[in-house]
Length: 342
Image (cartoon, rainbow, N blue to C red):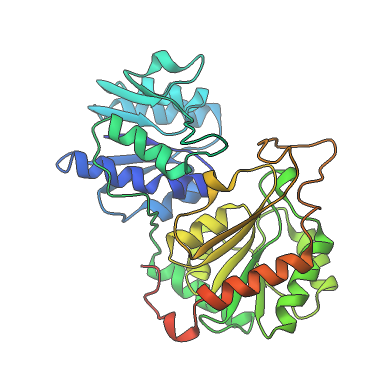
């Protein structure tokens, strides 16, 4: 079998329950996965995943991978992304049976199609991992729920421990803070992030800024505005998973690191503006959410001409909500052992 989910971090994590469902439905069929190379370590070693193919974002890389996949003679290919490139790979794989989302311009690629979005009730939305599981089940998989899981290799854990030691943080001590979002509209103003960090530190919490590539300037700004804030040095996704596995909680914007934390059984709390909490909040009390009150919320716009939803969320209120959530769900150092998140 072939499963396709090229990007992004949170979405790759959210497809893991669907991969399990495919493995449960076809336990004797080897399962191979296509994703971007940086995410491959998260999937390698998961139950049922026999091979992970790295997809480069180039025309030549796509064609080369298509030729390699076609030689594998798959019985089933499931496209969990649904963009033109992933649909091309599904068709080019030569799989006898293909499944994907019923999207305009691509639906004919698949023999099995399901709607991309469902509304369980007026104003409500389906959890993203449940959407992928629904597609896997339509393709013959057997669901065991929507709990996400990722793999963290020993070498990634060792490097994560080194980075945390360099930030003077012990296992279970730090609160991971995510300031930026994948889209500009999902980011919180830097001043608000700094005030939240200062509020958490005044309460006696140690705070670690989790910043991704291209966010170095933001990290420097926040370190100036919130003295005492630790900043995670640049690292790859595998090491980031090792770092998050050792944190007490992850809080911040709706982001990939938040989903990575949930997959590692680390409590989370996130605030939402253009994205809907139903879609992106993992189930269970350990994962809290706060949503803007503006009537245009949940628009899913990647950019916004007025951008009022995230600035409307006050850092003082955020501090109170996060501290309350941590009191009820935050992990202690004693609860975080060397095998946490395995």
